Amino acid sequence: MNQHDKAIELKRKKFKASIDKYVGAKYDRHTIGILNEKTIHSVVKDYFSADEDLKEVPVGSFFADICDGDNITEIQTAGFGKLRDKLTYFLPDYKVTLVYPMQHFKWTIWVDPESGELNGHNKSPITGNVYRAFKELYRIKTFLKHPNLRVIILLIDMDEYRLLDGWSQNKKRGSHRYDRIPLELIDEIEFADIYDYMALVPDALPEEFTGADLAKAVHIKSKEASVVMNILSYMGAITQTGKRGRAYLYSRYAGEISEKASEPETDVDKMLEDLHIDNDKKNKSSKRIYKKAVSKKTTSKKESKKTTSKKTKA
Image 1 (cartoon, helix red, strand yellow):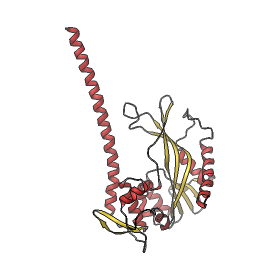
Image 2 (spheres, helix red, strand yellow):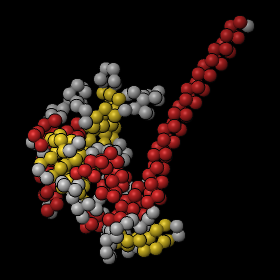
Image 3 (cartoon, rainbow, N blue to C red):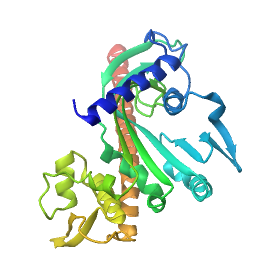
């Protein structure tokens, strides 16, 4: 067992202790009565500090999740854009650790909102990895070079409880998340300097590579790879060397750290926008398909009744 494996094993034990503290070692999956909102946030907060006096500390007009002297720890499960005002205030005077707990493996459990009955325990086909965190990191990209900021990504296996309150017939599409329960810490990845970002470039990539090459190597979508490449370029971990057709070519860091991203900001802004648009289109399309199916079924029933009525009269 190497040094990293030994370190992560100790962290897993510590994380498990926090899970047991907030969820319980004998957690009963057949009831939601003992679940708390934002359980994952509470567990991660305890993992970084068990001292209750250091939690939810007022700093200026904000509250820090954890504040110990000049050190602040903020846990954000999504929506990193909301952190900009906090980071603007905190970073000049405090060393800030930003923690992003994200899924590795996820199992979905459905909750009847009326009875509390639980159904299913289905594993998601999507496996989370550190590269999928970059969509959120892009929203605070201009802060990533600040010497007082470090980012920690926690890859966690978790159960996700969703309410059966959606718009589709089975109530699953358009449903709301009730809570996420962490099961196990898989890995902890820290970004504190350029070398941490450089480590994300796989050794298997050729000397010059594109975003598509990275996407294939680390099993993410091309649009996700575009965000990763943009941030790696901005941080100076990779350098733009030219183009292959329409695609930008990059090589590993081999010079001074650049102050700006090689690719235009607007390209990635548009791409992030497209990710949301794509999801919206899928949701709207699904709703239209569902409504059409229901409409056809209703029309079919009416026609059937008319036919039956005519036969009876005859």
